[in-house]
Amino acid sequence: MKTNSNQETAAPITGSTLLERTALMTLPACALEAGVSRRFLELEIKRERLRAIKMSTRVCRVRRTDWEKYLESSAT
Image 1 (cartoon, rainbow, N blue to C red):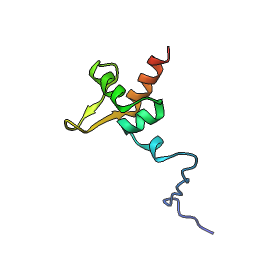
Image 2 (tube, rainbow, N blue to C red):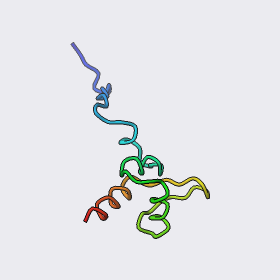
Image 3 (cartoon, helix red, strand yellow):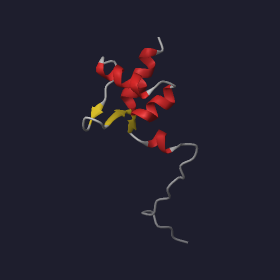
């Protein structure tokens, strides 16, 4: 029996949520994860303690890598 070597099987995604898979996070999602308010995170961005991507005056996103660095730095 001959098998097709070009055919790939995708492994199912298990144990991960949409929040874990995205590269950009919203401020409400970050606030929920950290247990703080959105306003607190807005002030942290203004103080330049947390890096964020401002898409407009009201829309802001945080890279997951920047979020993890922020959590690590504030834990000490």
